[in-house]
Image 1 (cartoon, rainbow, N blue to C red):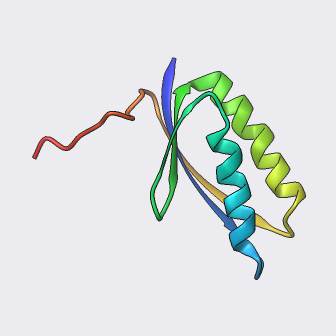
Image 2 (spheres, rainbow, N blue to C red):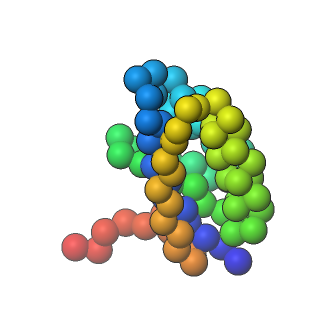
Length: 86
């Protein structure tokens, strides 16, 4: 089953930037389609392998930060090629 996942990582500490950069770099190395914008990162692919990958990567980020929030939106379909129709 294909899925689209939007992620926002918010480390709750002063040196937050490097933690976000490290997380995004690991996402880029994945076999999934990754698109970034200034507010969030979208990941597209097969749902179960993607969630297994994200679980591992989020755990790594949690181990390296004092406190961190992850916001996640999941849609059941691969929307990486979406273009507005209006």
